[in-house]
Image 1 (cartoon, rainbow, N blue to C red):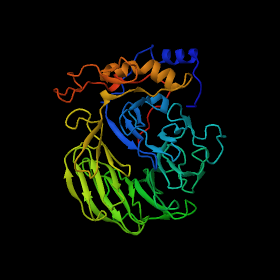
Image 2: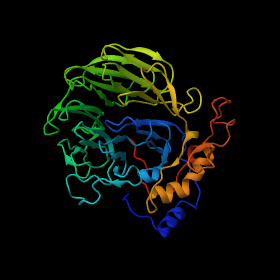
Image 3: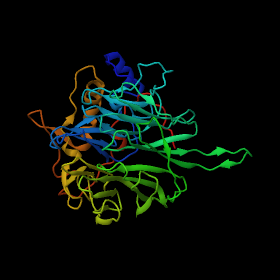
Image 4: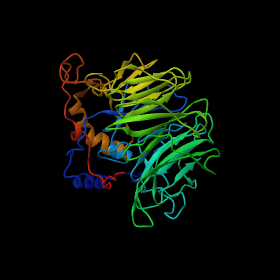
Length: 441
């Protein structure tokens, strides 16, 4: 989906294709927060991924502004994985490639779309499923497109060009990347190998792959997976690499504990050996290792777990928040909570993971991100879609015109009242861009 200026005629056609101006299509999901990201070295900006787009705060959470899904470059029941570059670049994974904003979120472009489709680093139109950034600002991505070879790629020019890193496979979908914060040359990658047909015509069941590079992808070492207990549909994900030790890595085995629980494994020798350190009954949403050596594991329904011995042992420290995400900005921890009960915050803050305070709720949105005329953010998100979002959340502009406040302080969105969460799912967003149907792993 290329970045472009939207003429009145083009916007009218877009609206007409969606079934009429102002018509919101359902994406079938309850509004919730799903990810939190930060710009390296920045302790004021917060990027909150939600089920109805992206929210950005430039003032440490005092005000959040909305970017619609269509501007980012996706829609429906899909959540991009976000990373923020040192210069404030916003990277978002989508089924149509890596989307990049270099102007603070006003416009997004698809990485490499201007290049020849025959270029080895061409990624436009391809499902980019995994992403991470290195301490040198490098951008690492991996693809998981059905019916074509997939690979891991690296960029050293803010995602303008990419170099394939020699893991091309027509049967493996690359699912996660973890770059060592203390060593830009070290990275870990996991992949899911689909079911294959054996020489005798029988079926070879799916399996997982785990690789490590010590030279920025010039060479790879295949790591053993014998220590992992795997789920019925085997999948392992790199969850965290220690900020001060590239040898210390945490890997999650997805749904190794049916029906939804995971197992977390720890390696102190760069993945040569692993030991199980935590079993959960709910999906692990995030693993964070802090500069002080503590490790925190977030689950949405099973509470938060903390280790004070660099991940050797864990103890449960809190039932709340319902942490659908967890991130460490350096100065504080941030977690995605339930906007209504029981947490009453869409994003919360903590110093230790045990005590949490509200940073923001959806009813406190200040408005859409303000952008120039001619950008999709201005012409579609703000002009066409924001009024419906504001109405559904009960947000009404301040008489001064620069602050958004609750329309009904005693209604559904007031923390002191009985919480009745509105069924927003599809009433929030959706003018229908031509986005391919979602592929499934």
